[in-house]
Each structure stands twice: as C-alpha cells, then as structure tokens.
Amino acid sequence: MRAPFPRHTRLAILTASLLALGGCNFFGSDDTAEKELVQRIEPTQNDGSVQMLLPDFAQLVQNEGPAVVNIQAAKAPRNSADNSMDLNQVPESDPFYEFFKRLVPNMPEIPQDDDGSESNFGSGFIISPDGYILTNAHVVSGMGNIKVLLNDKREYPAKLIGSDPQSDVALLKIEANELPVVKIGNPKDLKPGEWVAAIGAPFGFDNSVTAGIVSAKGRSLPNENYTPFIQTDVAINPGNSGGPLFNLKGQVVGINSQIYSRSGGFMGISFAIPIDVAMNVADQLKTTGKVQRGQLGVIIQEVSYDLAKSFGLEKASGALIAKVMPNSPAAQAGLQVGDIVRSVNGEEVRASSDLPVMVGALPPGTEVTLEIWRKGETATVKVKLGSTAQTTAGNDAAPDNSGFPAETQGFVVEEAGLVLQSSAHSGRPRLIVSRVTGPAERAGLKRGDEIIAVGQLAVEDEAGFRSALAAAGKNVPLLVQRGGDTLFLALNLQ
Image 1 (cartoon, rainbow, N blue to C red):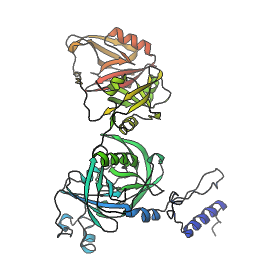
Image 2 (cartoon, rainbow, N blue to C red; image 1 turned 90 degrees about the vertical axis):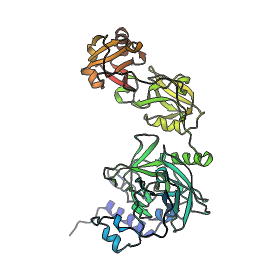
Image 3 (cartoon, rainbow, N blue to C red; image 1 turned 45 degrees about the horizontal axis):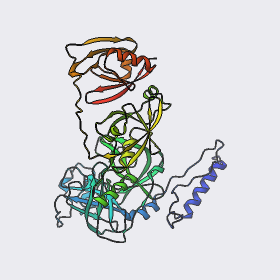
Image 4 (cartoon, rainbow, N blue to C red; image 1 turned 60 degrees about the horizontal axis):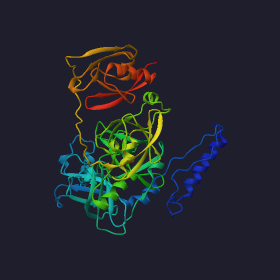
C-alpha cells in the first residue's frame, strides 16, 4: 500500500482540481483581462519554496487569435485557377509526402518564408480596427502583390505603408473596419523564465500555437544595432515571421523575427522584436512613410570587468567610446575617446548595446543629457542628436600596420611585456607593437597594433608612453588601432 500524500501535496492537488473545475475566464471583462494565466500557490514547504502550475493558453488563443493574420506576398499576380499543391515539389522521401497526398490533396503549397523565391509567406497582427497590420519587413520586401488572410477566412489585398529593414518591421493597411485588435504590452516588464506564446502559420499551417519561456532580453545580433531582441525558446519556423509574441496577460510583447539555426528549422533559439520598438517604427511609417533615428556619431565597445577596473569603475557597465567621428554631434558636444556613457536622460546604460537603442529611439534634433565617466569622475554632457542618414566628413582610413617602416627605433617595456617600434612613418609619430609577451599578450595586444593612448593620454614616442604608463597605475586602459578599428584593451600589470 502506498503511503498517503503529505499535507502540502494534498493542498496542491486540491488547488489544481478547483482551478480545473472552476472554468475561470481570465479574459471575460476589463477587470479580468490583466490576470495572468498561471496560478501561484502560497509557500507550503518548510523552506518557503513556491509551487506553480503550468499555464493554460486556451483562453489566450480564443480571445487573441482572431487578431492574428496570415500574409502572402508575391512578385507577380498568382494564378488563382491553380490552388492545388504540386506534389512534385515534395520529394517522395519526405515523411509528409503520403500525408499530403492522401489526406490533404487541396492544401496550398508549403511556404518557405522568404527563401528568395517568387513568393513569401508569413504572419502578422492587427493593431487598429481600421486595418493597420504589423509584420516583418523581410516578409514583404520586394513584393508587389500582398494578400492578408484573416482568422475568419476573409481575404484582403494589402497596401504597404512602409518598411524599415534596420528593425525588420513593416506596416500594412487593408480596407476593412471593426476588426479585432491585439492588446499591446510592455516588454520591459518581461523577465527571463517567464512564459510566452506565439501564434502564426509555420510552414503554412495557420493558427498554430507554440509556447515557451523568455530565455534572455536585450540580445544584440550582428548588424542589428537598434533592436534589443527578446530571446525565447518558443518554436518559431518559416511562416511564423511577423507573428505576435504574447505574455501571460494576452498582450503582445514582441514580433517573432529570427531564429538561430544550422538546419533551417527551429533549434531552440528564437528572437523577437520588442513591441515598443516596433510601435515606434509603425508610428513613424504611418506619419511620414520613413523612419528617422537619432545618432551621436561614436563607435563604442563593451566595458569588460578588466576595463572597468582600469578606468576606476566599481562595476562593468556603460558604453565605452572608442572613437568619435569627425564633425559629429558627439564631437561638437565635446565627447572624448575613453568616456564611458553611463546614462541617457537619467536611464541607465547597463551594456554598450543599450546606447544605440536608447539614442535611436529619439528623433534627430533631440537634446539629450548624458552622464559620463571621464578620468575617474562623473560628468554630464548635453548633445543635440544628429540623424543616421547623415554622413561625416574626414578621412577615416587607417594606416597599414601590417609591416614596419625601414627607419624605426625599438624599445622594450619589460613590465608590460611589450616591444614597441617608434616611427614617424606617414608623416606622424607612431608606436607600433612588434612583440607581445606576459601581460600584453593576456590583454589581447597583437603584433602590428598601434598604441594611440594610455588611458586618455595620447602617446607618440617612448618618453610619452613610459610617463603615461607610470601614471596609470596597475590597471591600464590602452587605446589601440587595429586595421580600421579602434578599441580599448585592459593591461593588468599586477
């Protein structure tokens, strides 16, 4: 005979049973619309731990699903007479071949979601009753014939109001009224580990629901400087692009945009555009048909733990300025290489990737107040933002550090593990690294690097370098030019 359940276990089972029998309508009224779909049981363990039940997304799908749409975009008008699937496009070795042949003979062709073909398939969602729809820019990019299929099977031609490739957001418009709309949430309230759900049309299977958790926030992806992506483990596949990501309150917190995959299919990592970023883009597209972003005119890098120590900071946070572009708003405001931007208008810059997002969300011409860390002290600088469309004047070509001039004079900095070549090549004094060992090697210095500054003191010769190194202490930030880039490296002499 099995031992009876402990009291706290019986309580959990009883609570779960009551919830199951109660048939709670979490979206029945305005008062209940904000209630989450997960119930929390009060601490029942001796250690104060909390037991949780899994969420039920059925009510979310029932109430929010009608505002989710399928999108078909083609480069040329489709032949409406040919609605059947061409089985020749599905190899007989495909495990779904017999399924399509026997059970779904009239199913539309399975889309590949922007694979470079003549048509794209994706998802979207309605944000206003008069027919404005958000989706991904890559779903409709280069397409002239866009069709929207509503949840109730109605079809409408759609007009592209505008798209923004940098954020991968597009705004569509259909001629319809009194449409169901989604509720907009605040992605800043999301926390890693929180449940989320996606509704879309993966591989053409419309109204498909997948769920998972928020894996991380504020993810930076290559060539995506203005979007702090939400990373989830929600299953996202071709056809889901442009669809909504919901929180447990039934609010849209993101647009499903990208996946990390080596196979082309879902591998457990997907990325969504935060809805506040998307709505900002949508408002600009609706008003002006284009998107403008504020710009400082700096090149930044992450503040590592070692760099934070070398600059005298207690924690590794902020955005370190590695280069100030000529004639830029930053240059005009007096920002300097080596400044660490710690806040914008009082909002903390936790990581370097935060700065482009915060500045890019503001229109050009806006004056912002930056709190910076400069030479061991806090200061404030006011900057009038420029536009990302502006170009800066000046010759940014980097010197060729691949070799050394014939007329050079070398010297050894033993405590740093450096051998430097001092030269006046190209008409100006230069300090080129010719050998690294010990501390210099651990700092990441490489042969051919040019040392521009120690801390925020420019150095051009042996005397200047040794003097600046002695004054910098044991943790030394070195500004290095490598190829066409400038970056700071932390030299630890302890």
